[in-house]
Length: 129
Image (tube, rainbow, N blue to C red; front, side):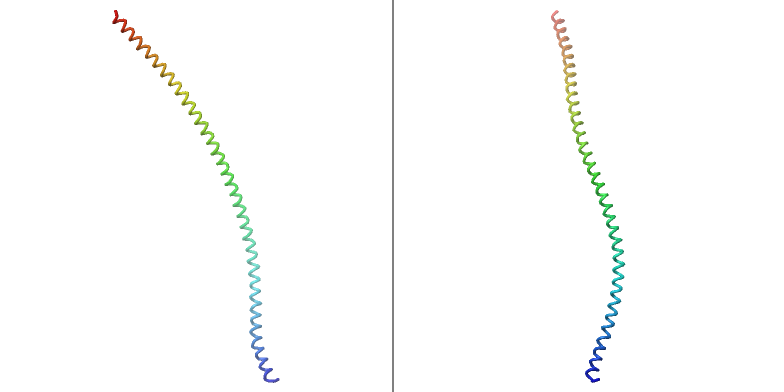
């Protein structure tokens, strides 16, 4: 073997040994990465299932809250209607009581006015005698 071939063989050996070691390390790293991804994939699937269930629960709760809000809105509208009816009844009772009190007042005035008129007439008759 000639010298240049020996130098070439040594250079190839110096480059091949670290390359082979790097390939072995790469193989080991890829194996660990595969195990990690399989494990992570399983946990990720489990986490996604739990997240889906949680979102379904939130959707049901949201629908329930919406139904409650709709019921409250309807109740508020009904109470507004009841308030209008009560106001109308109150106005009617007020008008009726004003009329009754006015009539009673007029009757009392006319009653007391007649007595005063009769007293004045009796006094005038007594004075004329």
